[in-house]
Length: 96
Image 1 (cartoon, rainbow, N blue to C red):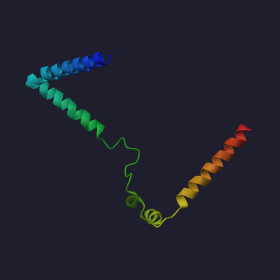
Image 2: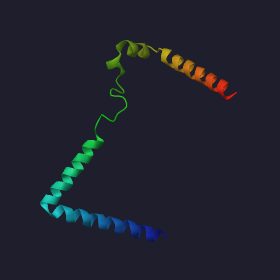
Image 3: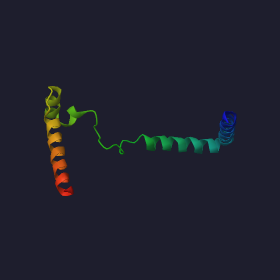
Image 4: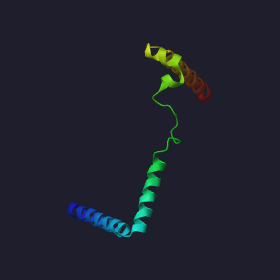
């Protein structure tokens, strides 16, 4: 069984290598493949898909908040916990 898997992987690799060699031998096709690869890479690297533009840089967007957090403020954590507790109570009341 393992021998068959190795043969299959080798065959797929050989076919892929042959296809790449075929497309790379002609300069026009090579240019098309390279352009397609660059456009694919650019589409994967766009920052527009990121949910938060400045993730990891809170000091840029709100300096006062960043100072509080760096000093050890727990206000945000307490606020979140209170909200989730209220939501939990509402859900329990609606399910009863």
